[in-house]
Image 1 (cartoon, rainbow, N blue to C red):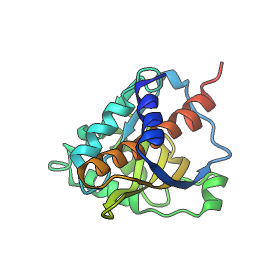
Image 2 (image 1 turned 90 degrees about the vertical axis):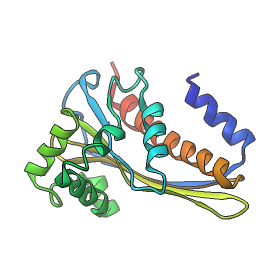
Image 3 (image 1 turned 135 degrees about the vertical axis):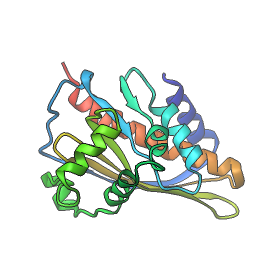
Image 4 (image 1 turned 30 degrees about the vertical axis):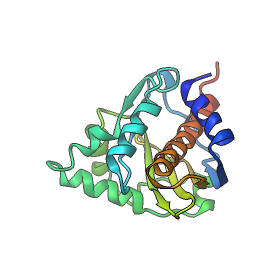
Amino acid sequence: MRWLSMILTLSFVGLGFMGCGGGFLMNQSYVPKAPLSSLRLVVLPASTNDPALFDTLFCKIFDDTTHAQNVVCPQEIRSKFGSDKALSALLVKLASAEFSKENIKAGTTINQHITSDELAHLREASRGADIALCPVSMGTKDLGVVTAGSSRMRLLDLRDGSIIYENTMDMNVNYSGEVGMKLMVLGLIGFAKDDYVTKFWDKFNRP
């Protein structure tokens, strides 16, 4: 069992994660356009109250050669914001774009919100990444006794702008303060990785 699976199992059993819930939407017509073994995944930076923590944990959890041989971490993209304002603005556009459940299931794209040049710019900035995990929203809130967390993650194919899937997650952990916040971040990113593996990699990477 991978180290992440062990941590999440112990967390759910012993650390009091509760109230887990969400909504998963899959593009029913999506088919990968190249062998998955050659794909490069970029994890885009999340707009959160602790960017450094989220970036670090995203990179550690997704840097798993079993499932994502080529990963561009969010720190690498965020480090370009100072010199590349267009990139920063583009990520805001991606996160703010809204799609109906019906459209995502039917196979919509992000091309109605960004231009082909912007899509090419994102690929160039992410070392030619084919797939992007886009945190539409992600955050935690200390409620005194428990810590609440929520996320909405969108997986994109950067080669044609297809939305592969979108998932929302709401959960609590029975800890507050710094401990509760870190556990919640770990849980949210752990679920994002699990979605990537089970809903994308394992689904399409069959012999």
